[in-house]
Amino acid sequence: MVGTGEMKMSVRQISAALIAGIMLLPVSVSAQEVSQQQIITSLDNAGKVAPKIDVLLLKQQAAANPAGSAAGLPDWSKLAQLSQLVVELNFVNNSVAMEPESYRTLGLIADALHHPNLSRYSFLIVGHTSSTGDAKHNLQLSEDRANAIKEALSTTFAIKPERLFAVGAGQEYPIDTANPASAVNRRVQLFNLGLLK
View 1 (cartoon, rainbow, N blue to C red):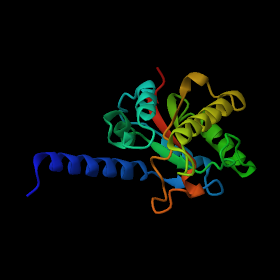
View 2 (tube, rainbow, N blue to C red):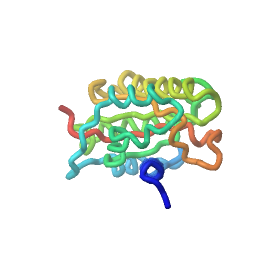
View 3 (cartoon, helix red, strand yellow):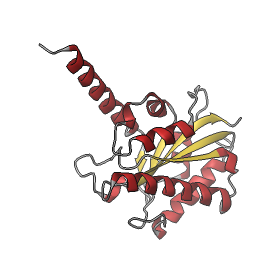
View 4 (cartoon, rainbow, N blue to C red):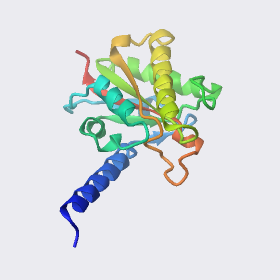
């Protein structure tokens, strides 16, 4: 017989696992395979009512627990309800510098964000890392990478800065759960936050 405390813990653990799984469900594309139309289709939020996301609260919650369990928090779980796309943008190990093969993908993202279907929306850029290194360092690195993408989109590609928000998720949501240290886990996720206010 399972006690109430044990039952609550197992429900919480199952909930966190389901939410983490949902965050991996969106289309994941490598830098060589992505097209502008895929980006537009994945991020178009027409007809959907996006839940209100407090980016500052997401940052605070991730910072409070860099080694995990943000997936079970209500504010992080809301992200699964948004139109989203996982994009493989390759970074130099332990750096915010992008590998040259990812520049084309970043340009396609910028073109898609300028497209009339997406130009009225704001977006959240979520950075992810592999599990190589310290969890706290990885959380900061993932946020730095998300901010680097935001900066490149707003300066080089002239996306209005007020349309872009950035946050790091660290190593918490690996795509390759069997190999969390794999480079495939270093990626960027874009979420459509809804109509620009």
